[in-house]
Image (cartoon, rainbow, N blue to C red; front, side, top):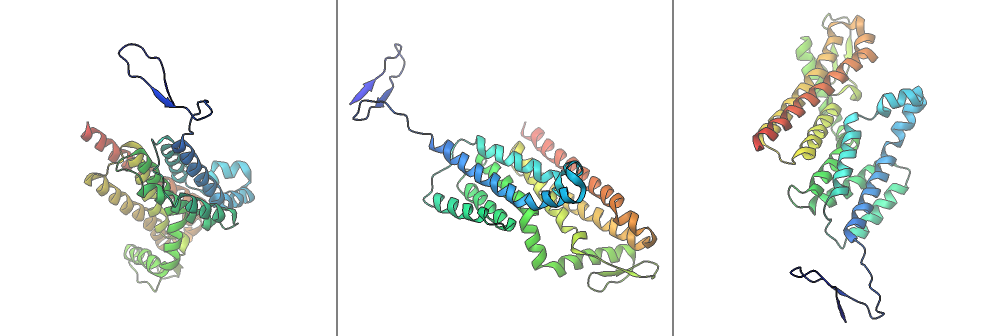
Length: 297
C-alpha cells in the first residue's frame, strides 16, 4: 500500500512505499558508500606505496628530519593526493558498474601483498575506473584525474625510466655536453678542462622532475576549473622545458667546476635546484590557472 504524507497546501505530496510489514525503511545511499569505498581503498594503496619512503627517511635522519623533508615524497605529491581524494569524496555520484566488485577485490588483494608497486598499480586502476565513468568537467573526473596523475611520478615514471633508461640519460648527457662544450659517450660527459669525466646516473635525470611538473599542472588545473586551454598547455610545456634547463644547468656546472663537485652535487646544490624547480612550477602554474580564471570571467 502507499502512504501519503501530509503537506502544506500547494506543495507537492510525497509518496513512499511501505513494505509488507508496515515499517518504513530507508535505502542506504549507495553513491556515498561507493565513494567511501573507493576513497578508502585509494588511501590504503597510497599509504602502502609510500611506506618504504617513510621508513627509509625516518631510518636515515630521524622522525623530525624526515617530516621536515616530507618523507622524501614531493610536496606536490602530498598536496595533489589530498586534493584528488577530497574531490572524489565530494563528487555527486559514481555510476554503478558490474565490474566494481571485481576491481575492488583485485585492488584489495594487490594492497595486501608487501609490494609497493602493486599498490600503485591498483591505485592507477581505481583512478582510471572512476575517470572513464565520470562526466566531462565533473568533480569526480577532476579528482580521478589528479589521483591518477599522482601515480605518474610515484610509479609510471620509474617504469618508463627502467625501460628507456639509456635513451633518457642520453638526452640529458647530450644537453650537458652541448652546455659544457665537450662530447659524450653514452651518459658519460668529459669535464670542460679535460681533467676527467662525469657519469650521469638515473637519479640525476631530468625525467623525475618532469613527472612532478606534469602532476603539478594536472593538480592545479583540476582543482580550479578542470578546463585545459591552449595557453595552459603551452605554459605547462614551458614549465617542463625550464625544469630540464635547471637540472642540466646543475649538471653542467659540475662539468665546468669539477673541484666543487661536493658543493654542486651535494645537499646545497640539490637544495638550490630543488627549490628553484618548485618555485618555477608553482609560479608558472599559478599564472596559468589565474590567467584562465580571468579569461573565463
